[in-house]
Image (cartoon, rainbow, N blue to C red):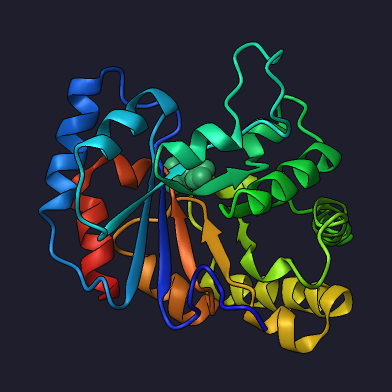
Length: 258
Ligand code: 13P
């Protein structure tokens, strides 16, 4: 099997800054504080996904390899007639190694599994690691949400053959646990979900490949719950929203996992 972009021996911690902060000055302040934080880079791969506008400037002046960069989205084509879009080539030229694909906040504005599948393919073509985001809006008592997760995985990976899937990362983010005023998922329930996701991946790609694919968790992660979510939830890393904008909290998450 080809060498994976992200080794399973490490934890992958991804900061999704979303549409924050309001200025480059503020972005630089958050980043500068974070780069001074001490954590074990042999155990953790840290990826920051700022808005496009800030990523380029932050990456340009950053020499170390301790923190990697990602984009929050990318277009599925390299078509010069795509107003307002960012291509995978641009990502590549901006030191971007990871891209979030199919985040729930993009699915909410109409992004389909079909488009997501194209984006994943495009990332892999450019040797960028796509982080495929999946997750249900709510938990139906009859278990319908499990069918939705299954559909998201199968359709989003429909174009990705066995030979290429080893560079895909899956991020499970239940929408009901994302954002202000929400609580993270219970870590035991998370473990059940990771088993369910792995079963689907085994049915698609076989046991050997499926068990190697990293699964992250996202949704109200903070310094207090990060370790438990990883240990009890049996995930390979975390996708962090609000807590990643506070360098002290995010630094504590990294330190606790070191
Ligand atoms: P919060 O950590 O703010 O709940 O956001 C999670 C998220 O959407 C990360 O992609």
